[in-house]
Image (cartoon, rainbow, N blue to C red; front, top):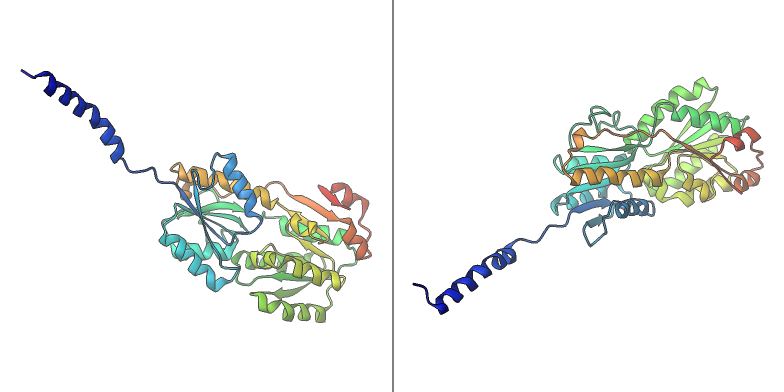
Length: 322
């Protein structure tokens, strides 16, 4: 027969079991996202996280690594994120995507704003990318030809177009291939202006001036984006009209842009991260291509260049900066 003292002791011990069990449970691990080369456009990604209910340092952690847009440092940044390890790595541009794919074949990768993931070798198809990468492309089949048509409509006398691009960017190489086909069909001549790193800008600028182009086409490569003001100052100083991929260049003083909204791509990239954290496999998540494009024109810049933008082009613009 159990006495009162033993009974109370027995009950007290029994009541302590679930408390002890709870105390021994490991803490819930906070998901970790890896990002290379944080820049202002990533603010849209962070806003997208908040829209999905993710609060940095509360229910999600972000590991930042910087390569300063340098190809030789991208590989080290990617390896550091893999060694942590993070649960998903989010990158923008082909050079960073290539570096991360070299560093891991298992950690999911979400690539935002990659030009042509198929020709860059990042995916076997848009519908089913395969491997550990998915994301959002910034190009569509007819986009390059459309940019050239808009440029010629704005500047009817255009004859030679300088193409500022990064040869280390696989998507820029695909961009160049399309230009080589599209430019002669429109009766234009193409001048290649490659820039691989920050030390090559001045030499490339000098070479461009020697060819005396009547307009320029600038890619959205992350290296060029980091030196946005430098490029805009160069074309303004030399009265060279330029077409850009992203409206942020026009807001900073560029002439005109035609392309998808970069902030929108970064916000939409969060949906991929969310699905992956919920258990989806990147190989099964289709890569999105943009379906809506923005035409943005800076009238102040046009005036400084002595250009009169045709009324029909102004009417077609999504935004006119005055």
